[in-house]
Figure 1 (cartoon, helix red, strand yellow):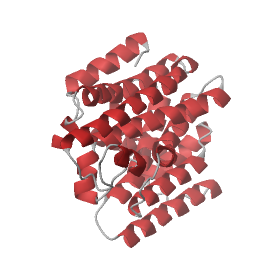
Figure 2 (cartoon, rainbow, N blue to C red):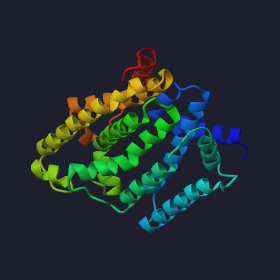
Figure 3 (tube, helix red, strand yellow):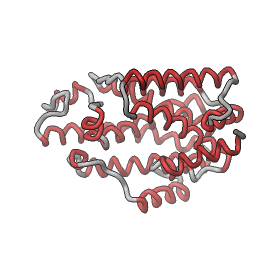
Length: 283
């Protein structure tokens, strides 16, 4: 497969499956847009393994195979028929993509497969850094920045903010469909909720509100990254973060809503956030 077709395949994956990220990725110039599409396609592949059907052993074996693919990328040995890997190999030729972050992402997905629970908020943050902070750092390698030493931890922080928002949005879906509970056990106990999310609705609502406020603090810190990016990369980041931040605001306005079903923003609102990010560079 040639590189052009490989990128086209990754862009199709992004257009059809990146329900929130695609709004930001569209704002990038051509080369960075293609690179981010390839990055999304790889991250999606890893995530789909963890969230897919089948026994844990099979998922862990599949993740081991992806880890071998990353080792192949390091060695310059890529399956020429794998569109995602062909595209990522080309991304690595043009951008300083830290493949160690991809390996961390795989580790985070393995934590999901193994049903890891988190005793404290610090434990949860370590997980969020693996599954989302890594994506922030990988994205930063594509965006570029004049101050990577300062920008990298901020990109990581912004990823944590997005992941906590995801956790709150999907709190019931994750528990019912996959038996996963991400909220720290110490926080659940503080509000009188069991480790399996059993307790009075007002207690559940209180812990959701508490974690929502925490997520807001991570957004405030992570979004200080924006001035360190060029205009298009800033717009992309602001659009993606802005959509999730709006979602968090919806949860904060009615914390019990996530107990009734999965929340999402309408397409028109996502488009409005993206346009605002492009014109103002704000989240």
